Image 1 (cartoon, rainbow, N blue to C red):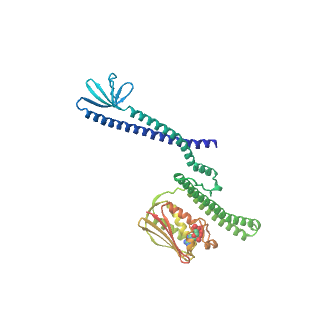
Image 2: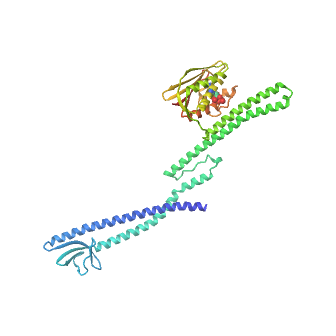
Image 3: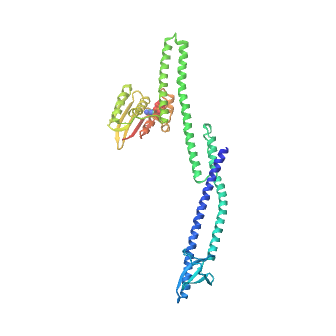
Length: 418
Ligand code: ADP
């Protein structure tokens, strides 16, 4: 705490110091300018006065000049010394005539002006020094006040923890850059809070999804233990159910792992140039093999060269085809096409299945979201397929479009840049 105090004080001290330095610099500059102006006006003025006197005494030989009258003699303003033996005769105020080797010299004594100048400079310096002292103290106070919001940021950051992520830094009294800093930090906290809550929700949904199959497996294992040893029918049913549930669990864990790896940016895509139409045709053939009574066909299969991870994009396409099979009646039709549209390749999976209601369309890409029909129905699923497909497509710079009408069917489009 004491160390922090020192740090804070030293920061405001440093600001005050900088401020004083700045004042000193401006003061020195001012004195320099002032001196220059003084000497310039003095020279011009003296020359004018001397020339005027010379005009009046034009019948003699004259040497004009502006001189300082000191105790030791005269010094020209341009630095040339006058012999100490030559003594000035005061003619008119500061105006002096000197007889020197037959020449008469008109001298304008600047002594009074010089005294005035020195007095002025000294007064100015004294005033500036007092002002500097006051300003230094004031600058310290101002910077301490201005830095107050930083102390609040430090306190808020220390207070912050996972359970207090909804707290924000108070921006009272902060202005300009500090206000901007606080706003940016608060926005960052909002994003962190959102990401954290999403993560929490994800973990809770995942645990929930895993709990059901585990409970089913447990139930069948108990049933096997009690009656299965003697009853072959019970035993076969239990084995089939355990097998199905563990398969579903494996699928779910794989999906969860994919999402986790993707979120941690640990997923590496093996990028290559490949023919999207050829990949789609291959996936279509594989789907036809498992399609049962569904009609799986293609309308158009163009050859389009794209740059991407072939197996990841195939995985995304499989998700749409599997969904089409899952949500379309046994004798329904599923069509896959691949076409090039300008600088995009478009893969379309169309089905004449159950379709998706308008209010669900926005949410089907959310993790674990399943439409009420899918949730209540017989179709297996965890609501992760579409969100994974979207992740893959977006990682390739592409996008997904969907059109659907309940009862009429759905069309999912994958658009990839070519
Ligand atoms: P899952 O199919 O495992 O439930 P998805 O993320 O793949 O999860 O899909 C989310 C939801 O979107 C599904 O539960 C289903 O309600 C709906 N859906 C996806 N594809 C279709 C489709 N072709 N026809 C009708 N509904 C679909």
